[in-house]
Each structure stands twice: as C-alpha cells, then as structure tokens.
Image (cartoon, rainbow, N blue to C red):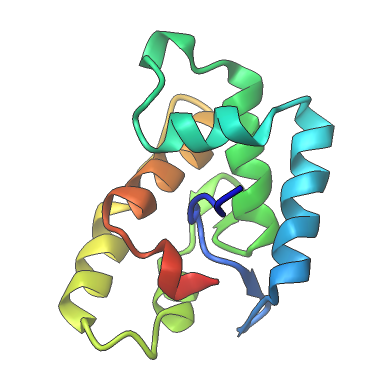
Length: 130
C-alpha cells in the first residue's frame, strides 16, 4: 500500500524528520485509536470521499497524526514547525504559501486536523516531509 499524506502531514519528531518505521507506528496508533481504515484516510485526504461521508472519527485520526508529528498543537497548525521540516525543500515559495494556506481552523480540533491534512496533500508536499 502506498503511503498516504502528509499530513498529511509530515513526519516530524521534535525538529527532526521521523523515519518510516515511526511514521508507520503513528499511522497504526492513530488508526487503532480512532478505528479508522488507512485506505479510508487516504481517500478522504485526496478528495476521493464525499465531504458528507467524512466522519468525526476520521477527522480525529488526522488530528492525531498532526499532533504526533508536532504539526498541530492545542488545535492549532504549527506553521514554524512545518517550514522547519521543509527547510531542505528547494521550492521556498511553495513552502511559505502552504504554511500560510494550511494555517486553517476547523469547527473543532478534529476538523482542523482534517483541513490541515487536506491542505498539505493539495500542495503536494507530503513526499518532502517523510
């Protein structure tokens, strides 16, 4: 199965990028905690799922991933952590644009996690974060 997202989100451990094993562990922990199938998460973040069908638990999965990766803290996107994680990306304009664009707030923390994940996926920055 292909790795999805980002966040999503980017795999950040403190200020260093996580390894693939840690990324997998985060996915498994968050998917088990929220009873989410990884394929469902992948489809949702890439717009292959109708918004009306994205459950609260699925949104909470993305919040969990964002928190584990230090991209979301107290329900707020951490733009500085995001830009630091992408410091080696040669497209500085895209990174800056995404950091601003992905600083979104949802109706609750889980909705914020989902919106951030979709934004990172939309900007095609996932591969630079893992």
